[in-house]
Every structure is written in structure tokens, then in C-alpha cells.
Length: 242
Image (cartoon, rainbow, N blue to C red):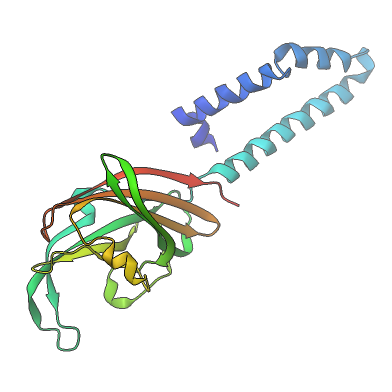
């Protein structure tokens, strides 16, 4: 809590909290009047001190509860230089012999914020969009689970340890195939054909763990060739912890 309120975000939050209290009639004048009403005579000093202590404890408890409610348990990041694996060699699953075609994989990274690990963390693709100059012209919604890298292990739920981020596989492209192949599990055929032509697409990814949920939107510009695409994060936000 001390670290939060020493940060720039914490100071902004405290400033807005004080301003909001003043706007609804709980400014300094209000509390001076309350304390004056509590002090009818010198014999009741102990009662006044008790009331002040109770107020301070209640205020600290309220701040603690607000901090617990709005704190981030984990962060969901995407950096093209780190979360796109280029020219990856593919192997035959049974014999582990290298295949002639290469592939490129796109991930999002999940990392702990703080010292506590996140148990049973899972991710999903929740929507697909086809965009035209930033405007959505077609959209598919649903929820299909994603697999944590390395994909060969088939893990859909994992524990995120502090200092050890984990990657979720989102999609890949394969040499000479020239399609965007979603790596979600059990998605319908219409999700496959949705990426049938070059263009600009939006993918919404959601990750949850221990009551916290965070979402990120990736904008994919695909130019029709397996290794000719760009991915940038568009927007992300955190839902309050329940």
C-alpha cells in the first residue's frame, strides 16, 4: 500500500479522492465542524481521541479494501520483437524429423504483478473482427481456450510464478500455406474461413486467474504471405478483482 501511494498513480488517486470528498460535502470544513461538536468540554478528551482513532482505522481499512479491489494481480503484454517467433523449424510429431516448411508463431505474455503467484491461469480468444480503416465490418464472437507455450504439452491452465512470465499461443503462419492459423482449441470452421483473404483483423484475448481478469486486443495486418504480417496491441484493461 505504501508503494502504491508513493507512486504517481497513487498520488493522483488520493488527490481525486480528496477532491471528491470535498465536492460532496466532506471537505476540511466539514470535519472541523464535526470535531468541534465532539469537544463540548475538557473532561471528554479521551472520548474525542477514541473517536479520532476509530476514524483513522476506518479510513485505513477503506483504503486497504479499495486497493485490494482494484489491484492488478497480473499483466498481459504484447511486444512484436519478443512475442513473435520468426522462422521456426517444424518437426514431424511422431518421428521428430524436421519438416521443410518453417513457421512463425504469435504469443501474448502473462506475468505476475507483485510477489504472489497466480494459480490456475487460463486464456481464451473471445472475438474476431475484420477491419476496414479502423472500422469493424465483420465480427465473430465466442470463447475458445488457448494453450500455453510450448504447445506440445497441451496445457490450458497453468500457475504464473513471480519473475517467470508465460506465453499463450495465439496464431501461426506456415511457409507455403499462406493462411493465418488460429491456435485456439475447438474453434468452429467459420473461424478458419474468417481469415481467408489478406486484410486487417482484430483479435480479443482474455486471461483469468484467481478472480482477476485482463483483456488485450491485437490488430493483425496480413498481406497474403506467410511471413508478411504485422501485429500491434490496440487496447487492454483490467476487470476489478472479485
